[in-house]
Image 1 (cartoon, rainbow, N blue to C red):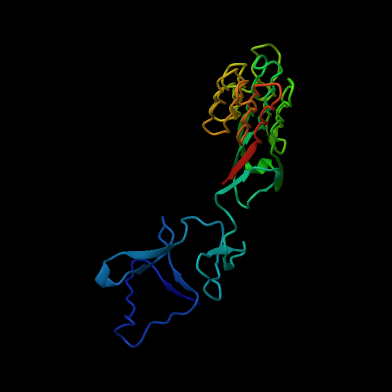
Image 2: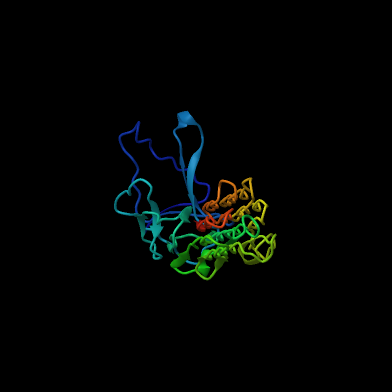
Length: 312
């Protein structure tokens, strides 16, 4: 039968540092609980340092007997004690849990880290290419910026791997009044899609290239599409905050600047008919290409898109 210490009976064990004999008790050693609280074992600090202690206490109410068996040896630095569900404790190494960030500037595959709960994705589509001039600055418009889209989601809603597509920038119009090509969409699986900016076109003498397929400042749930309009003939590219900025239109004598973006790519500057004919390419991510300023120069291409993924 085990040794039991109960009630308010004071028991003082000899101090092993000053006495040659330590107390040995039989197993199992039991400490009785009070009527309102589970039993606890207190291990005080050195008396010269104070009266604090470390305590191991049983819950006030238990569904059944619980026994934890300690490991046979110490673990390594950074490990933690883990139970097998049957009372056997063992030292284990934490899995790769923590913050994760991945930026995609080219298409690829994203792998979900172990133990994450949330995923946040930002995507910008490819910028549209600028239009080339046919009449020395008459109908030459900049390409639209790539759309920005973001989404916060539970990690449990996506698989272990996700296909990521980074949209290419649209080609600039070739010589002789050719429209620019639209940029391609960027995507994170089927969950997040950011459309590409439209190419500069000759819809009218003052028509701007449009941003990413209608993306502007409209919001829907956790999605916030935004992109810059391409510049019209004789006009500058549109500015934006998150998506790609628009490319600049053409002008007879002075360069028309591409738009700017706080977090996306800048638009390319438009060319002139009096010295700087070609349009400049839009910057990555998603900047629209600038229009060309004369009929013998090509317009600028749009910048490729981008996809960024955070997980925690």
